[in-house]
Image (tube, rainbow, N blue to C red; front, side, top):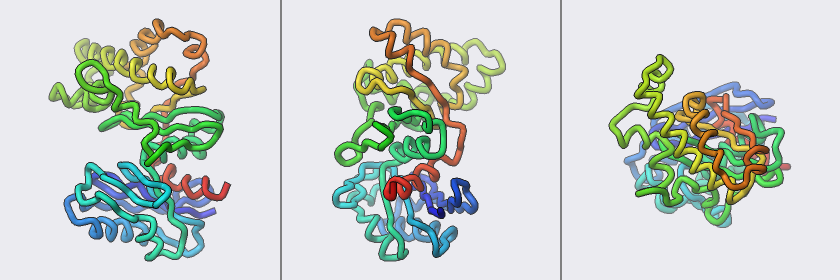
Length: 279
């Protein structure tokens, strides 16, 4: 089976040709985020054309914003101001003679983990991306649950302390202190006590954030992705310590934590939209 997956980000667009669950060709270009909507569509089309082959089954695209799945519209993409209402599926199907499937990027991450990654053994899990911000995709009984306008899983926006979970659990935790998360991770690994204390604090906040997921969904597993998740060993101890006061300890003890180990899960996840459509 040949599929194309596309990850539309605020700064770059990546398209990949996947053959038999492996990426065989990939192309990345800048996102013209400050241009009018059709200029962005043209850039996506160009990226697809660089990896396109005639015998693909379809094209899947992950976008950083809400999607009206009933009317096939991308809505209000924060990082691309001109994208208020975009009929992306129709625009691309007019250019390529293949079915196109569009969904939120966090949903694509979870779906990608189900088909390609750490989610394979689980019927019910939540994929949580902790990077620039915090997003989540929900798999229930082996199927993606998107909710209305792909709004399910926005746990990062749950009210917390003086703001929301995302401000304390993602890269914002470091940026709000005018720090670089990657630099602090390097320092912590090298034994810097202050840097390690930062990750200990981060682990407490992440436990509180993930605790909301356990209360809402009681999944078998939570799979972490994104740049901050790669520092899991630095915050795991304080995270687990914080979970000791979780009121439903049987649910917590059965929970598995996994960390995504595939840097290409964004495009693999987008391609999974095609796989899901033919299951």
